[in-house]
Structure formats: C-alpha cells, structure tokens
Image 1 (tube, rainbow, N blue to C red):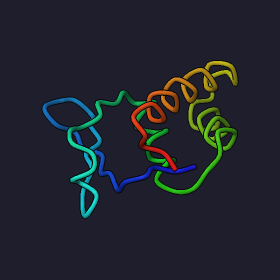
Image 2: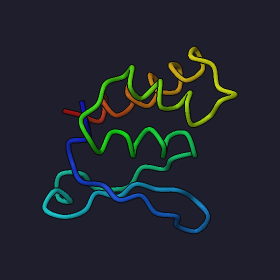
Image 3: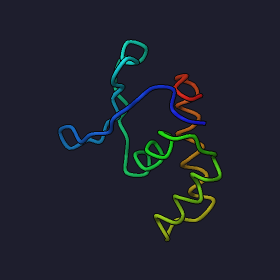
Image 4: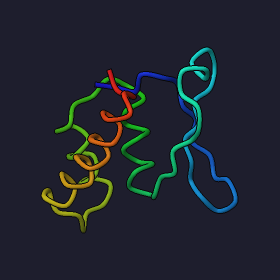
Length: 88
C-alpha cells in the first residue's frame, strides 16, 4: 500500500502538515495535520510498503515503543487514510 497522491510534509505555524501537490492537488483539497509518529508513518507511505514494515520501522526508530503501541498507531492512521480514500 502507499499514498494515492503526492504529498509534502511541512511545518506550518508550529504544526506538522501534509499537503497534496502536483497534478493530484485537485483530487484532495485541504491538509492533514500530523503528530511526530503520524509524520513518520506518512513518510513511509510515500513508497509501497506493508503494515508490518511500518510497525517494524516505528519500533526501530522509537526503541521505547512496543509492537502493540506501534501497531495501534499505524492502524489508527491507516484507518483514517482509508476512510479518506488516500491509499492504494
């Protein structure tokens, strides 16, 4: 799975946001506000990946995170992105 559109992640007024850019900007209007973990997951979704690969990458990046906590974070964001039809 990966993001359907091309997004850039920027810091705007102290908030991390993802904004659709390029030819796809007409299909997704708005922005997605992300926390640090969300931004990490979002970056992983720029390339084709699996849920398990994202969870493992989170645990590796954040050694204090458990597999369960990482899975919960990944599942929560994936659910929201699926609902918004932003994944392929």
